[in-house]
Image 1 (tube, rainbow, N blue to C red):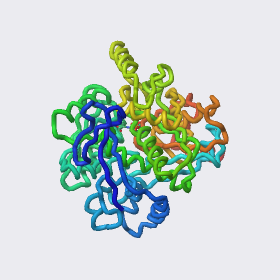
Image 2: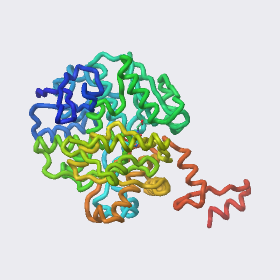
Image 3: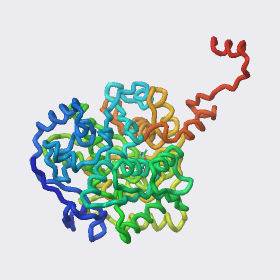
Image 4: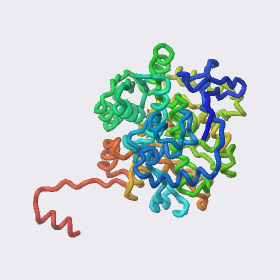
Length: 456
Ligand code: F0G
């Protein structure tokens, strides 16, 4: 199957094209880029994707990313020739993206949606414990195409863990990681250190580290694997392919997800735009993006200041004024959901495009709701880190507001594993005032007393 691909400016008034062989994160005009494709995408591929679940020890069929390789073929591989694609595509041994939606009846009940129509997809089940592995498989594949030997990222902890793991797995790759000092959960810091990355703790928060990486990308030859890298977002589209593959290509009414740097929001929107264009879907799901009250940029801009994609004619003055105000007042992002503690999301404009295409909504939730929602997910035998629980807290709020109807179908994306941030969980449960706290009882080693407690 032959596919053409190129990079293209997202601004339709510019639309400048570049080869996929070019290493760049922005257009000459300063806007973000998309990876674009031209080819034949017959619906019969849906059967091929499904058949590959029986992978027969082919790791590229086993991979939940490369199983869908025809739809993300910027590497120009012969998708049916193992000798060709196995040389060019990067994978953590086929382990990335092996996720699917699950029914969670207790969580469905909690948010107020019919349990038969409610699913959560746990991207924390990826090898490094977050959805980032989907995107690193494609970003590292592109890094190989351009001959990069060193990758760099700013991170709230998960991008860095994933980049560090992929770099460690490759034979000739090194990862440099910039994190806000004291700003990332210990589980994530542990991973980046253990995988052998060069970890730079920047005195500041994620936004400061991201600004450094943007400058680095201009002034040095390092390869950036943050989500402003359009090739990374290609891998993140596969989360939606897996949802659709599992639901037999029936499009749900809603996709709910947390928003941080807004890479997923952008990637998911692009997925549905493309499938719509290819004629694979007739219905568009509505996207609900949930941000933390302490990191409210998208909610403030979209809901209060009415910032819109507007066919690509964005009113930049609204964004400039907002950021000028943030800087003048010295406002910093602050939330227990440290993964989404971001005030200046790099994919803001692409996310507006998604919201326009999907008739999407944005909502913000307080940390107390996020933490209760996180506890609730675990009461259903699953688990997630705080940022992921924004999905559940946001769904609940949108149902209460009547935006999501109890009988509509909802797929929520849970983005990171519960063991990423054990401190957040332990702190929650050790405080009996919290709604779902399961506080341990301290006891003397007195068997009679313990027997009494056990039998009660
Ligand atoms: N959930 C988790 C667990 C995350 O780690 C992130 C982002 C998000 C949600 C938000 O996703 O950026 O696509 O809107 N983490 C990045 C990082 C910023 O550095 O690990 P997004």
